[in-house]
Length: 313
Image 1 (cartoon, rainbow, N blue to C red):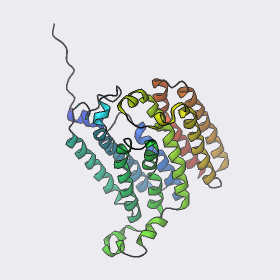
Image 2: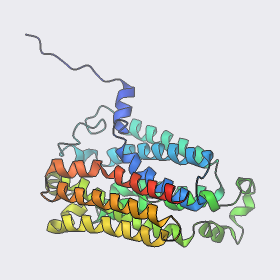
Image 3: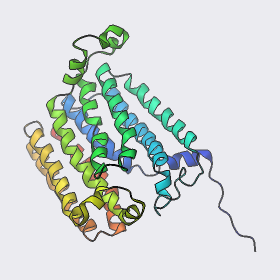
Image 4: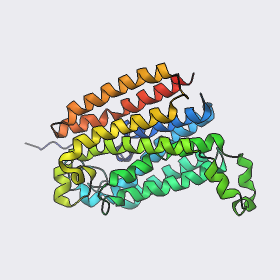
């Protein structure tokens, strides 16, 4: 009897697996708050150009982030059942190859940002630094989900900068970087409203990434990985639900009077129903329930975006 062997995946198939192409929930979690902020900043439809920049840029940067994350976690992922067969962890893609792919994807995203304005370019550089730092925060920070929250929320200030920032021709004048008003101008391109939305979104990221961490809690304890699920212990479920409510509360408070209140109220009812559903999924802390809850979060993000988009009509 001859043992059957599975066909060897092509390089393209391995690359698509590396960037989680068949699991779009990851980039959707980044996309919805960014688009919501874009709509708020523009007080409605932001135009085809900015819409394409943020949609394509989000997909590219999330894909690049997967490359960096898998390289950083390759030794840890070997001991986690869910991640042991990832391309880098299993050795089917080398470290240099994965980092090269990530660099190409990030550079392509940067080319998109170059079509916006100088302020957006500056904020995107800070966002890139956060995306690189996060995978390593899990070694030293007890709540690395908070670091991810900042990184995953950075599309919000970028959206406001893209709408409020100065014209692109400024980039052609090297002296602008040394001008006394340059850095204050970059800072003022992002109003307090954007930072408030970013703060609220941070709580949403902590909520869904804690659900994600609850899936691997037993494995993470064995290998010494730091996660919010481990740090919170028995408080994980109430904190997750509390973070959802804080997220919705902050966004409701700062957008009150900006969006149509009837539309926003209807959105809140749908969003709160989803939060209640999440509680039923995670209350027993099963791997299956927690992972399902995590994967469903993009619907909550879409619900909030829909409330913003329709509420601004």
